Length: 205
Image (cartoon, rainbow, N blue to C red):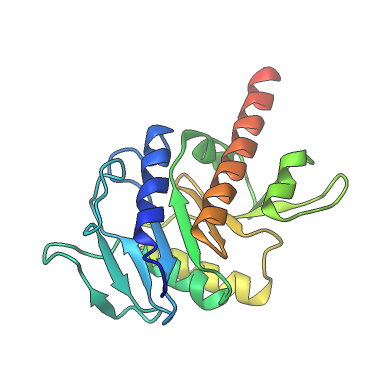
């Protein structure tokens, strides 16, 4: 029997809320079911107080299968999760959080990628190299979220990223993984790297 992933999403959301990465109702988490559909946090729900019925189940094509509650609506960023699951069929979870550090480092990037420092922690994103040269893709932020999703599809279809993570400028980081626990790990690793970059920049002043 396929376990209900919502409990893992609730636990991660509460931890991220406590860390200040999902303040208010910001951010969204999803996890895929065996039939290919996925549960995603409903719009306008406090991530520090999520309950089992604060989710919506949708297909990769956008069809709503279960609202859990009549007032629920899919997250405004559902289209980004749809894009990730379409591009990376092996992905079973997709996490998107908003942190101060992610927004700061994305604001320093003039181009479409942020070079990451060759830290040991980069291994936590799947790059097992000595002194790795890797960058996280950066996308522009748009009010119309499907425009962001479209840009992700176009870019990654042509050139898949080396790491399972992306930044949206002045918005936040998105990661994807083969399980909710691994996705949580990826968020933590990415945020550690962002904090490191902010500390280095502050130290250079």
